[in-house]
Length: 109
Image 1 (cartoon, rainbow, N blue to C red):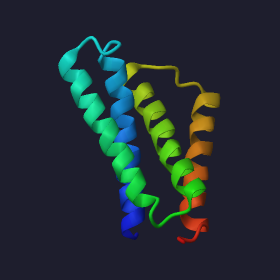
Image 2 (cartoon, helix red, strand yellow):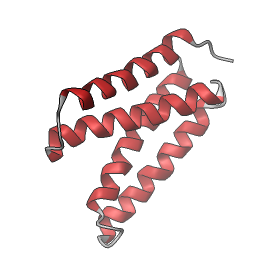
Image 3 (tube, helix red, strand yellow):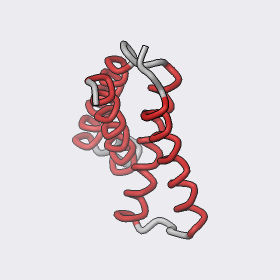
Image 4 (cartoon, rainbow, N blue to C red):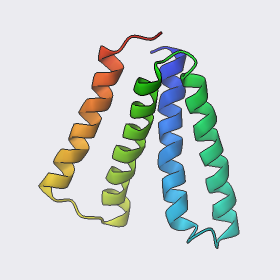
């Protein structure tokens, strides 16, 4: 895995982090959580921009949002006891398959 993909993976993990931060900041009313959330959000964008230096825009952006969406949905199920019905899990699997397809079927610029 080259550096651009590592940056992209880290950016996606940060996206999961700031999504949860938004939930726990309670509308940015909790200062400490809000500050950490904004820092992680900025870090996510910085890492994404580094990945985009070497990856196609569509591949990088779709992968970043896919990691964030699937990861956040999975953690929502595990941590927040959100619905875990078969259709929801199937849709998450489709997102993951799409991200893996972009990784293994796309070439870097």
